[in-house]
Image 1 (spheres, rainbow, N blue to C red):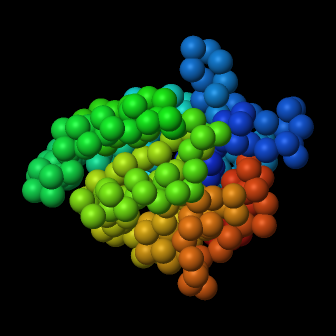
Image 2: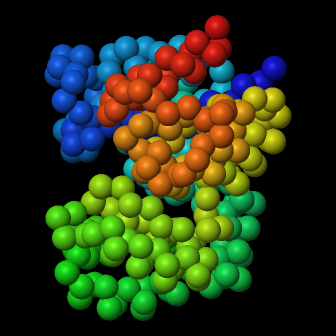
Image 3: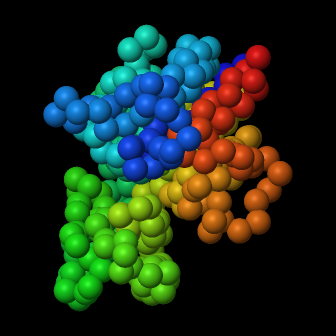
Length: 268
Ligand SMILES: [Mg+2]
């Protein structure tokens, strides 16, 4: 039997200094990512141990909105276990197989984006009005795939988010608000379709999926068992959840540890 554990990374398994929470003392953290030799993402020691056990006893699939380059910085996950054969990056626009993008997958995504008119060149002109707006600090591009806004969290309101969502939803985008970032994601770029492709490719019988944001929500719902950290956008905006989806009792980095503990228990 092949069990696939597909998980989002940031704010699900790994946490920045800002998102990790206050409950854990500094010596209980272990860094898993470094930028310019400075640690930027963390797990608990216990969480990393559980992760290593899971990754060596089942198939782990990282499913992240990070680009391949950003994903490859998270070297601390793979010090003692082999890097997984597959990784879903750029929110599902790219599937890495042995570190190389699968062209057959991304070509399909590109064709769909052209057909739906949801490519970056369709989004950028519409954002001009918002760039001058009070809450947008910067407009960023994730390679050629999608756009995300860096917003001023103190000024950005729920209504601002609802307005943006409405405008772009009609045009074929999903929006997700995570801290200082608002993602404007073409609906044809999604984690659940990429996960399904990999699950079929490796003939997985059971899929366990975890994720915190609305960009993870469909993937978590479509799994055999799903986990959402209680601090997650998907918990607050997801509405009624079916019984195969669990919400953690913990928040922050401890929610990540709790998910890994439950996945580990499932595998025993
Ligand atoms: Mg996340």
